[in-house]
Length: 608
Image (cartoon, rainbow, N blue to C red; front, side, top):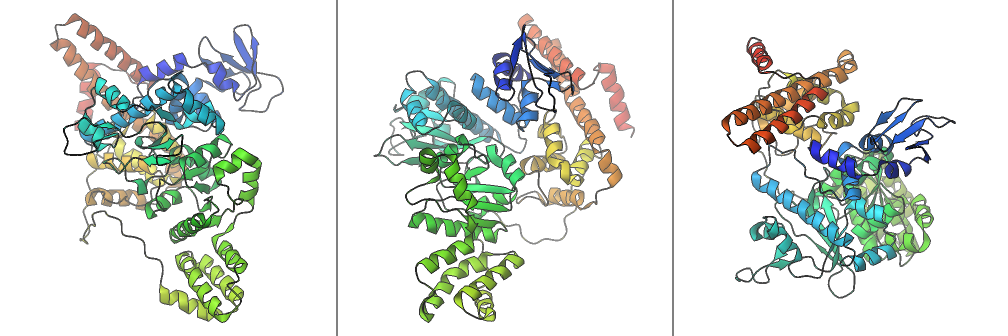
């Protein structure tokens, strides 16, 4: 959770006129600015931006708020996306103060180090002298400042120990840097100091869906070393479980029900700079089952924009089979010879790429086109081999209707009886998913569900489980006031964290404690009551308020005890200020605090 101090620091640094001016044509009138409201149709300007007070207000539709609320409403960002965007513009390093209770201290520190490294790389790119060569390179590739900031691009200087020294200066030591793949030793048994892994490279922070930095990719500016260098797998990062850019693009992907899948970081960033925002990229490996499952949360269709050479075609067909077997319809985008998505938008513009996207064809049709071009349908022998080449796609189609269509098309193109094709598909069997190296839970009798608190946390989870249509909206609203750490019951905390990780959750995630999983299944199995759904917003508001109230009571009690226990005047002042901040937070939630109220509340809880 971003602290109130950080939020206020960012709002104080950002120029609200500049941010809103990118979406609304503003005209200065005195100290303020006016323009046509972006939230309703009007012909006479009634939308006012007041820079001195850092807020906007429309006298027509009464929309109002600060710069964060503007981005949430106009740009479709959630709170954290808006904070990251503004932090990138202002140079403030965000510190996420929400603690994941399921995550050990070592993982929390590892995330802090990755966030520190991402910030350090970004500062090197912005350095007037040190980052000049990298900025010139990005300028040549059409990557503007806004896109750099949006994706947190950075620069690893050509220094052997630049990042290591900076990390040491703030207390991060070599064992952690080694474990995260940020430094290495040529000889692991040597006593010599480790050195930076990334040097002389444009840096691409790799984030999970929640926006947390888990790894890095680096691109060399010149030929010689490997073009791309990626973080090896670490305690935080398994490359087959993430997709680059998904943290930024999942909203557009869900809105369009379609993703564009490219091979590399530069392809994605170039397309984003050209106005394509529903794009994700692989991470140096062939598309995995986990990545396909990740995409399926957001889209039912994927267009594959791999290179147009022979290797690119092989990668396209292999990825398409994984997508089809995961229930996603796959389309092949054919690029001009010698072009990849990045070079195409650079040389011919976004319109040229859009034409290619419009001409995309179903993956089976693309295979049939290529086989026809290469004369695979001319003789009986070649038709037999052509069928062998088409079988993987026929087997991969888990959608029965799509597989039926595919079988009919192949039978027609090869001049074979449909029954023969069906027999071949049945004999070969469906594609078997590659095994995932996760512990397998042994079969067991029905597990008794975990106990709930029968309080506000349970009511909140019941709403999230039943109100699937508005679950994304509910979670974004909840996280503005409370986090997983505010759920004192371990099972309820784990279930809420699972909804945060995957708002489209329909079943317990792998690895969940069996008793907790049984409880989650009970929540999900209850049919939605229309009357309860109608009052879901009120129920959530009350539950969030109660959970926040419990946390504030605990923190107030802790601070009061600390004030009474210390004789240090400066410490008393600091703690008193912290109490004042908490009182302000309580007031914003409509909570009045006093020790007597806490005791009264406790008696009521015990007498229920």
